[in-house]
Length: 562
Ligand code: ARG
Image 1: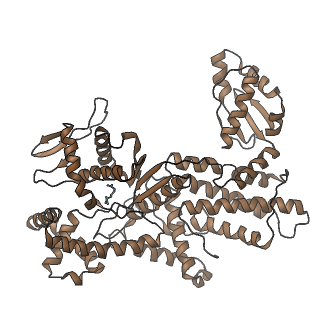
Image 2: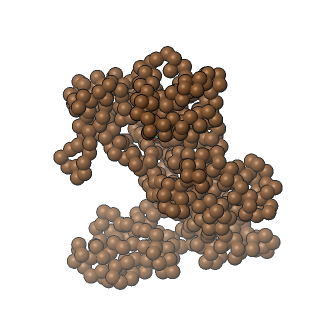
């Protein structure tokens, strides 16, 4: 990575100047007018060594050797203890060439095994905006991790055995709907209907809970209903996930963990971890250092029913046996953080996956303009299908010519609008859902990135792309664009380390701003100076290569034109 390279070169200078340091830290300059990168270590070093910072600064800036001259145009000392680093054109271009020839843009290869749990759709409940967020964020994280060469298995982990199934079976039986007649419209109508009935009617509520328990215990009739409900509901989910270009390797659900529950129970038992509490079986997980209250994990209810935490533990067991993963990641709503805290602690106690290898990657809420969870005008969470339709309509209304775009391209743009908006917000934060803003072709939006790519692509298709780059950089916007290109590795690195695709979305936007500024200021077509033209085409080609790859990591496809 560029920063690491600079740190090594600088450390070498420090040592050659007689200052023994183990590490030197370099960062992007906060004053781009003064330097490209900066180092703030001198101040600290001067305290440690009892030497005046100016003295250290002078020694460093006066030091010269071939490597320094190749790397820096200048190194400047600024009081009280900063070094401003201006890179040489040759060094910038050498790194541009390196990125152009490196298939992972400077990222090192890894080969670990991951499982990523995302999507989390619930059978028989319509998918809503929250499910879109875990699908979008999860898919991007999955691709970012796979990009480094890792193996990553995506599991949707459906909620397929919970109370909603009992409620829907109750409704179906109550209306004498036969198995053959069950369809998605009926399911979409029944779930909200019976779920609100349960809030009013204690008897219905109990009946539904009983149906659920009997189903889990293997009741034949309910199993038949369940299978049909699964079939209809999954077909509908698949349609929506396909539209989002989100693909799960496994379509497992809570129900698939049931065979492993007795094994986990036995493991808990033999480790003396199960404790009776008001008739239920719980596992205490709090430790002496906990600053906040961590309640016990509820493993089994007094009626013998297992719970959400039990199935999550059994699922860890299953994944541990099946894949021996190094890590399991969970892309789930922030509000479930405590649940996973409990589950991870128990997994650790059982010596399945260790606490550090289980990661809760929480995401925030998608809010409306009022700062409350996004709703349609009639007060429901909008279904995903409606949301896709609405997004398309808003985009079409933006410009006359959008109307005539091929359907396939429009669908790609809908994806870009929704995904880029979501991913440009850091995953753990809430954000306000403003479709009108998200679908603009200007600003930090998906369409802006696509537009930039297509704009550059037009020139690249018209002229021959050069395979070589000489050492010249021609003007300020040109230099800025090249420096921005060099940041791609650290954007990929941060997105991976923190499991945050927003680093890529931010980087893409900044890269596109530089590319448009460059393109607006420099005429390339018809340029007399062929060397200059070649160099610029080389740079723009790399820009588009990066945009395309990064968009792919965000699961955004590029339309044929816009
Ligand atoms: N179905 C759950 C929900 O809608 C999300 C599942 C998350 N994954 C998990 N392993 N618990 O809230």
